Image (cartoon, rainbow, N blue to C red; front, side, top):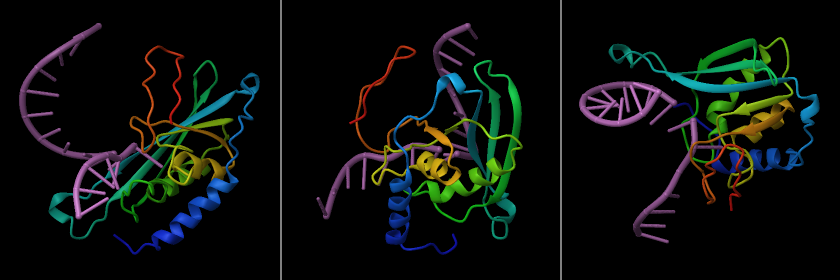
Length: 164
DNA sequence: GCGACAG
DNA sequence: ATCTTGTCGC
């Protein structure tokens, strides 16, 4: 893996991002027309030649009309992975590819859904926060597991639980 | 020192 | 995240 900045430096960047994050919900659902979702996958080099090829990350973004959920557009970006997975520093590994794919879109969404945490993060700057602040787009972070904090699991559709 | 730890 | 093998549900 390529050299990376000091953890201290990365923490400062996250604190900077957290300070810029707008926590208040400014999204007006009545004016929500275009939404987007992004997810990443990793492309590994063939076993036979792993000595030469490097791992790559691909980010795909899909634009949907809301609330019909009809497909509007899509874009993707493939780039070399230059940062390892470290809990708490996920954005430095995945955000670059997401930003790249997003910029390839012709139309910009009113809301972006990311596969990673947002403000529920040790320094309040998870992947969704990082991407949202970078793009200045309303963003929601979705995760299958909590990075930190505890809370009950919502069961019914529409049910919510507080994470503490 | 030990355990936890988004994707 | 990814891989592999087996099992479950529609």
